[in-house]
Amino acid sequence: MPGILKVGMTERTPEARLCEANASDTWRPPTPYKIEFAKKVSNPSQKEKTLHTLLEQYTDRIHPRREFFRVSQEEVRKFFDLMDGEMWTETCEKDEEEEEEEEEDTSSESAPRVKATAAKGCRDMTKCFTDGQRIRHTIGINKTWIGIYDSSKNGIVYDGKTLSLNKFAESHYKSERPDRCSSVNAWKECECEVDGKWISTYSLPG
Image (cartoon, rainbow, N blue to C red; front, side):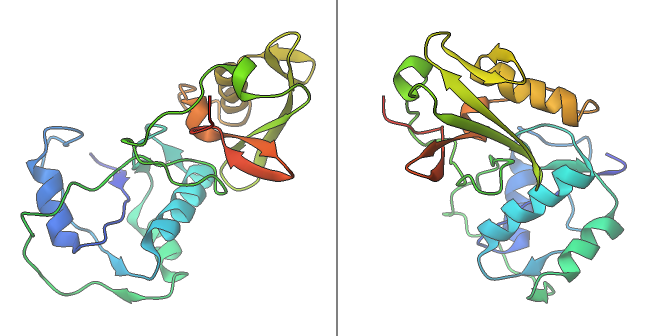
């Protein structure tokens, strides 16, 4: 896929992850994946989330919940150069007993990484939110919309409009990133304010 890179992390070796990706029938390109470069870093999950946030801010993310970006190797290398660690040079064999790496993530830097297998929480705004509660959606690093939940209208009020949670996030993408597909899973990407802290709306109790 010329001009498109898959940028992800693994807690195993890059070679093990490569074998796994090429053996899967899901999200496999016309030709096998190959490792362009990798770096061994501390706290890889957090660094992957930060890197995705930066790439989404400055490049084109092909799918909102996948790790494909329309970006050059040189641009990604610049971000790698900012991370402490060592470039990967060793070759190791795949451990057949390891589980498949998760590819889901969020575009909000402050929202926790959510596994696809995690139990879903509340999905009814009348039960999830309280009147006057602040709801926010962030794209990249600093493109944030903050709306207010109105229980009488059962919607998020932003810029004079009352929107569902999904429409709130979709409208944000249409405004900030018109070049990007506006499809979104807002429950994974949005946050709500509880006791002065922002928490993910993904696993709120019902």
